[in-house]
Amino acid sequence: MSNRVTKAVELIYQMDNDELNQIVDAIKLKRQYITKQATRTLMVGDVVSFTSSKTGQNLRGRVRKVARKYVTVDCGVSGQWRVPGNMLTKLGIGQEA
Image (cartoon, rainbow, N blue to C red):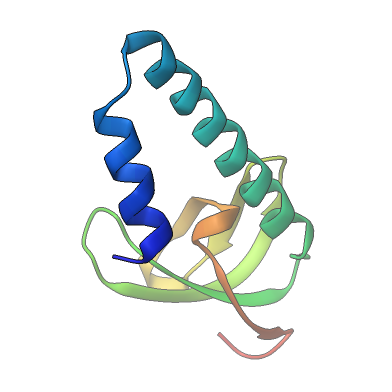
């Protein structure tokens, strides 16, 4: 673990319930911000990859729809997936999937 993470974990172990709730809220807000930023960089037709949380396999596909939090990705034979924007890696613009 990095030095910052180690320090954060040590501080978390010293917190009471109210302080932990504040940390959880801050983490949720930061994840939401990161997801929205990642989603804004994607457009319909972009080629992306992600790791399936169900099977653990790495999938590639083409963006079919971009919503606020989730992106619909067409993976051909593997079907369409609704994926959070922060889980996607952009591979190219309009290339073959």
